[in-house]
Length: 274
Length: 182
Image (cartoon, rainbow over all chains, first blue to last red; front, side, top):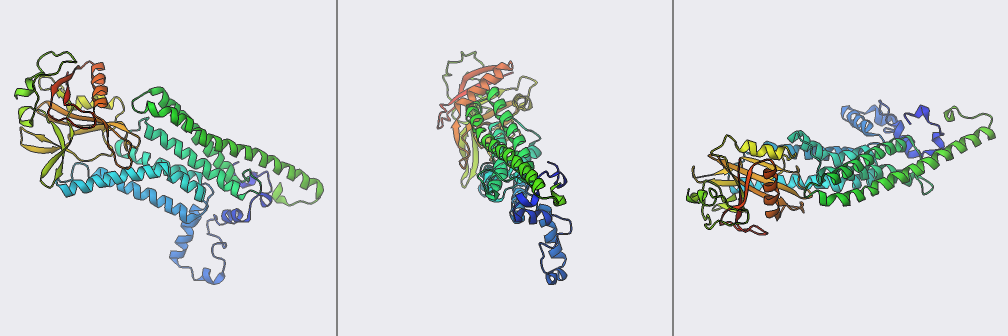
């Protein structure tokens, strides 16, 4: 599970061409696959090299399939952080005039609304569109991280638990849905990225389960009233993750069988399958 | 300060309502409302519903906030700027200290703003609605009751309805003010 060299399955037989190309392009040089013509490469200036650089840095199944969307997600989080920090910095220094306070209140309201979008919508939308369980989870976690940086506090509340829940849902969808799309069956197709994503999704789902059950035991008003629903909603990422593991189990076994068949049918096999 | 002593010095049972109603900030060391600036000055947005008489004690607003901090309430979080009228100084003052259960209040929270004028603390306590997209007021009464019970559990002397302010407000504030002493 830790790298291609330990891959027990012939990569070429299970991974679609698009994913193989993506992993190749993650090499430090940027790789010829991003710049297929010699003419363009020769004209590459610093700007182009920089573009290839950040794209290479973001080319990972754990971050997302399209580096531009990954960059957009990171930019969104940074913009939100800047907005939230600005709101905190202005606290107490806004003049007591209608226009100043109205503007300040709108800044605060916008921050709250963006936080809710990041927590409730972004992880699932990003995960479905671009894969990338790590960035899906980071989108949900971002408002909570800013809250911690600004206040130095982290309290077990409905906000906190919903972050864990939506983060786990986004991460599990980001792992399983692209793998199902790649697959020729209804089960997810195996890959290193899928396997690592599955481990991350499982960990985040366990965190969500722990968070919701702990909130349910505190009974603090008004969060106690939400806890039952939240515990039940953990079933969503949990079922996705279980589906992913079922796919992993069958895909892995199928790969082993294919391996054995290949060995018996062909006396000389490619070194890649060993 | 005629109305500040009315009701607060007497040992009222919890259910008893003081006979006099405070109708203006000049009658009391406490604030009656929290305000926001408007074109014509300041307009009230929510009623003061809990007050603390700390002038004869060594406790301050910080001790009040410590009780909320011990319950993991945030003291830096997302909220609007509000003001109270300090009759002693004849000026509107930005909230002196605030606390809320969550940073964003996306799914509802209890939230308070406090002002301390010469040892008299005025608290506006309410439960926010979930942000949809703006926060509204779910209840004033629920937070007043919750905090009254919380400070009583800490050993403070709590008199629900110890004062009555002329600051009734929807959805559920009838003017009854909880008076808390060390």
